[in-house]
Length: 283
Image (cartoon, rainbow, N blue to C red):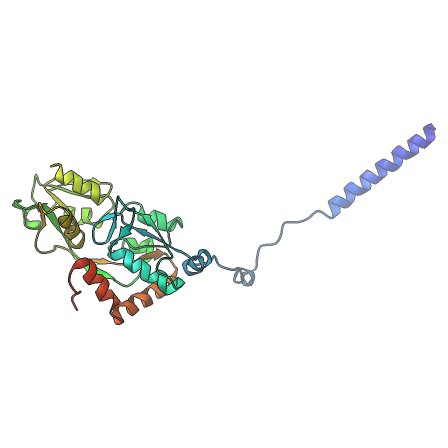
């Protein structure tokens, strides 16, 4: 019996040692690095156009606080404006239905991060095209040309940038080109920045500022909300609005540009412009 037990132990030990040796000889080595030609065959991530078609919806970042361009009705929850109609035209071009859109609120501060994080497909939110912003996003062709001005009380002595002097308090939105421009043009003024233009307008009406500055197209919408305020004549900058798209997504940039050209060629752009701005665009 002892002999049989010893034989079994010896046999088992031999099997274990053989298996260990075999495992050592057949150890799986790390996969070799891909050759240049293999890397070229890697399928790239789907672009904006493919994602839109997959979900059957255009998710777009818009403003909720700018009358004429993007304003949310607190009663109905509906968001309307110039930018919204442009977004609908793109949805119709890609998905065949202008109602296949999902609107997400953005501010001047949050819009680029939301685009880069993939929360939205594009930004259509009175966004001025600048060289600095071009480092982070791509832009469509210009779809609206505005100019920066001021909103003041009707009896205010302020009539333009020349009247913005030391001691003048100017309110605007965080992350906007308006804050940068007014500091450059009127360096002695005190500039107060708020989260969005709705808050800035509230601050102006509360007496925290002497003037509110942003693009004149937006200021006209604010003046329409409250007839006690007026927009100063003349603009001291040019503010070309573009639709912001993820950096490198040339396919979607081309599609958006084609849509804008179609709108202008078939007269739909003029209708949208007149509907919200009150006049036809200058040719």
